[in-house]
Length: 72
Image (tube, rainbow, N blue to C red; front, side, top):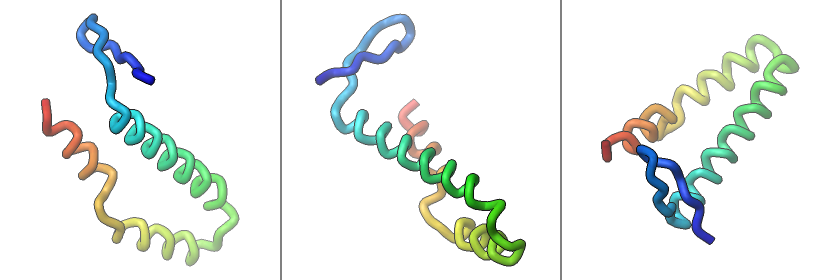
């Protein structure tokens, strides 16, 4: 199955690998929504520990966006 994307008024096919990557991004967004939904149920200390843990994760979302934008 080929999905077409609009780029500068032209339609071009998108690879299965790109579709998988977009699905991964959707999974990340779903996970972040779950974290946001559960955050209010944590104590202040627990929220701080989760925050510290997330700060230490690599690669960062910004790094991935930077790599994806490098082909411009």
